[in-house]
Structures are given as C-alpha cells and as structure tokens.
Image 1 (cartoon, rainbow, N blue to C red):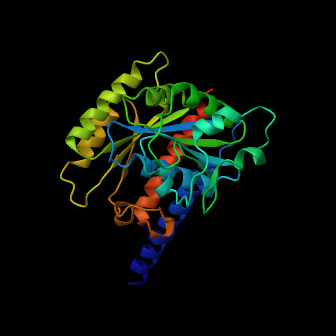
Image 2: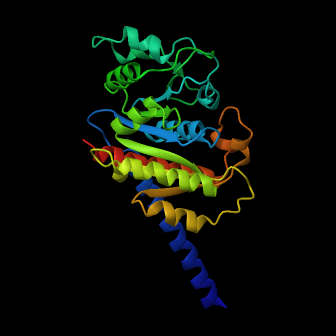
Length: 281
C-alpha cells in the first residue's frame, strides 16, 4: 500500500513539474523580444466562425504576457464585433482618421491619444466609428500598419474575410497569419483551399501560418483528428479551440469566465503565432 501511494505521489509530482515546465516554455515564447513590431493577421473564409473572437483573445493574451505595448487593429469596416469583444465603451477615431494625421515625429503617448484603451491593458484601433462607412482600403491599411509598428511590439489585425483585397494584402504582408476555421466539413475544406493559396504566394506563407480550428457548438460531429490531419497536410500547425459557453454568448470577453481548455488554447495559439512572427525578417 505504501509503495503504491509513493508511486502515485511521484507520478503526480512529475505531472505537476511537466505542467510548470510547459507553462514556462509557452510564456517564454510569448515574451520573445522583437527589434521591430510584429504584425499577426487573423482571417477566415467567411463570417460568423469566430474570427474577431480569436483576434480579441490573441490581443488580450499578448497584453497579459508581454511588458511592451500591444495593439489590436480592426481591418474590417463591416461593423464587426471586435470593439464589442474587446469591451470598448466608445469609439472616437477609426483607422482612416489616424492614417491622415500619423507622422514620424509623434511619440507613443501622442498615438495612444487616438486609440481606445482596453480595460485590462493594451490598445484598440477600430476600422469604423460604429456605423456603416467607406470600407478600409489597402493604402490606409498599409499606412497605419507600417507606421504603428514603430510603437507597438505586437499588432494583432482582425482582417475582413477572404478573398477581400485588404485581407489578401494583410495575409501577404504580415509576419504571421492565423486562419480561423470552423470545425465543419465545409469549413475545413474551404480553409484547405486558403492554405493552398498561401503556399503559392511569391514567398510561401505556410511556414508562418497557424490554423485555429474552432468548435462553435457543443455537439460537433466532425472527427477532430481527421480534420486536423487534413489541414496539417499543407504544412501548417493546427490549434483546436473548444466550444466555450462564455464566448458563445457574445459581448465583451472576460478572461476569468473562459473555460480552462479555452484559455489554454488561446495561450498556445498566441505562442505559436508569436514564434512564427519573430522568425520572419
């Protein structure tokens, strides 16, 4: 009996040590230093699959772990949900407004005066002021992202859905890419087509791409292992994000209300994206 108890305790201690080591490794990946700001673009093949939710989770995760400025940028003017997910109370300035006044003489404190402070840290730049307006164009997107890289170590971009022009530009120019795929047969097959396109870019983007395979229902019928294997055939890393009741309810994301598996998936996704972003020149 004593021997069995001893073995059980050693097993538990070993498991706890492994968990601590893994958490330390992931934290180290999230906190990797950067010489110039890294841009991580998030997109999907269609709306309603959790694209803005994943962008918000990434922005919050980077801000929690990093000690330098983090920006979450909305590059989809179709009245998206990113400001709501980030808990923005009000929006005064949009990306197009900031693009017109940015200049190299501005300091970080000057820039943040035009941004929305996020409740638990970090900054948000919406694509619109909460009403239907002119869509964000490629010139504005490039102006804003290139200029803001001077001030923010990490910029998470919530792109429009593919094949939009700004989304294609963002995916082509980002340091790392996250493609959000719903855990359905149609979603997986459509995402595989996107991955094939990324592989055909002048500089193949697959090595710097991560797929977030999301479950938007508690009763997913698709075989997860088969879906992951199909996506991995293209050479990308896949992170599965489980169904989460808090996320499914909509509204501002409160980290404390997320399920443990969801928090772990968000941290892993952020670490994988950051590692790939740092590798890019």
